Length: 557
Image (cartoon, rainbow, N blue to C red; front, top):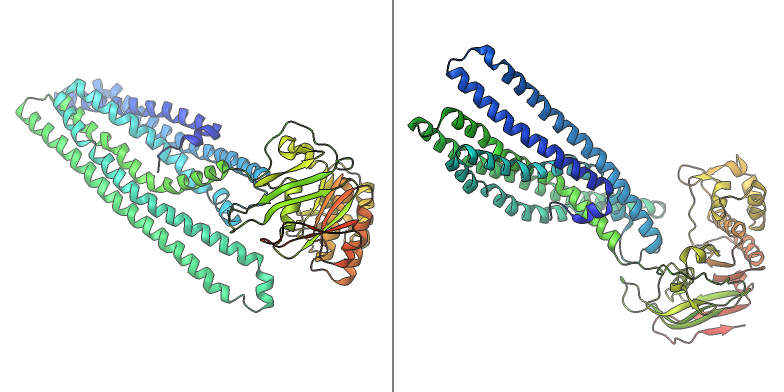
């Protein structure tokens, strides 16, 4: 585990600013340490020589001011570090959000949502400890020992040589302990990710668990995962406490050796009183930054693990189309084709699609049917540009989507997924997801076309009713109609619908089927369907073969 990941400095401007500030404050602290030692040794020597107390007043005032300065610098460093940690994490969170949305919208790389949440949310305190305490201490550990050795060498070369010989003992123990700490930290992070992912999965599936009376069984499972996290945390703490004792012992032996040799030479008269006192005062300051660095290392290990995982997610290869430069043609006027397309999910064995050829003509409503796992949703994601083909290409008017501007392509599309998401906002604002600038009249018209106007008017506050998390729940049929209203409002050239009638009752299926038929007017529509109510609306039906089957698509007029 590297003490300072250069990728943090490259990605986070606040980290670079903080590091520069820490260096400046470290130089101030180093100068204050040397000045304090020299002044204290001078005062003690003057007192032993019988000098009047008034001659030392200025030096004593300077000593007090230097102590205040060191305290202020320490306080300012921690405050600046915590502020920088907040800004760095905000930058990393925003970059991670943009990256996951633009390059990993389907999350086919096996990364669990719980892991992303654990890295982006629960890493605040961990990174705070890293930037507020560990990073400043790392700077001091690099500056203070070197400055102390050089300063002591100008006073007494023999004491400086003893310091040079004993000083490497502390970093050596730190490296050995750090290797063990890294393994324990990784185990603890894995346990935390497992706990977060399991808890999130249980929350998502709670209605199903309650329906089958299996909710209480998950209590034992969560307790088991939580106990694993507890054991990993305790193992890390044991290493932390033991390493602190080892580093204290090494530093104490180094200070004792310097003090004994300086004391013997002081008694023999080969070392002056002021020089000897300066060496004795500076000996603890030599090892203090390294001892504190070892103690702060364990507090920062979690922060480094969080940062490294977020950086790994940011640098993972993307799944979607590359950033092209050409403007794509409109699907209202040009065909969209899959040409010998194959696709393999990294987390699944074998290809889901293999050498698939498919054409979606302008203005056509095409129904895609097939067995579960045949790759129907994958075809939809490829047409939307949410995935990049493993082999072959997706084209519009003969131009590969990889060569087209991603934003320009997405602006021509509307997508109704199998499980539409609701924002914690009003029904009107949820429909406006299709067009943020739409008027109230346009929103109501889109809802009417989608068959949603009647149930929306019946809600307590009509279109102003808050839905989504913390708001009024909607049934599956109502949710699909809100998603269809978004597509009507967007007035896109190409609409992709993924199982819009799945899990709906017969009445809702009829309403949604009529809305899909209206949606096909003046638009190109790709609909993934099982129900006959949707298939009869299609101009053409494509039967997608199962994985490993015949790659030739069966077509029904």
